[in-house]
Length: 92
Image 1 (cartoon, rainbow, N blue to C red):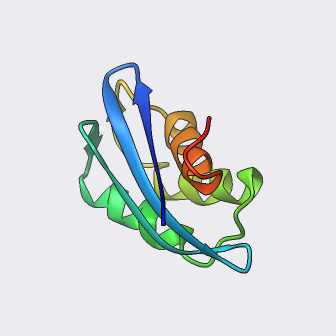
Image 2 (cartoon, rainbow, N blue to C red):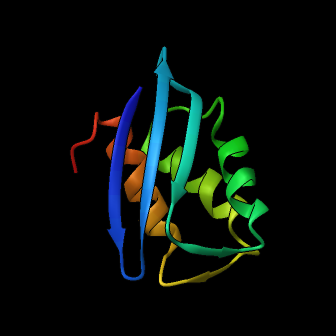
């Protein structure tokens, strides 16, 4: 399991990810950010399972999952950065 924390404009995004054969098999997104409805984050985690560990596929999954979410001080790009950082073993 790899972990990464990314500081967004208003909050910290913490991602834990497990990769197997180039695909995300487990992911946890936590932190002190504001996303409503709250289940949008669970939807994002769900959509990431099975996705290839590439920036384009991660971005597509997160953009789709968070498209209706109201986010204060964080962006889809911030979530993509955090997931990709975790995929790379915690290095930005």
